[in-house]
Image (cartoon, rainbow, N blue to C red):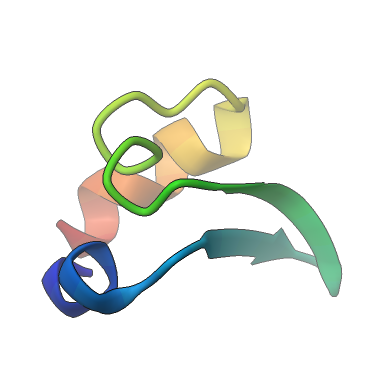
Length: 45
């Protein structure tokens, strides 16, 4: 995730083959707004 934040222009979170949320890689991991990303991020960070 750190690499994506430093190098990416956008990040997308997918669930069940569908893009759940896309946005700025510096903002999304620190301020998730969707319930699925809120549940996912603590597992990978």
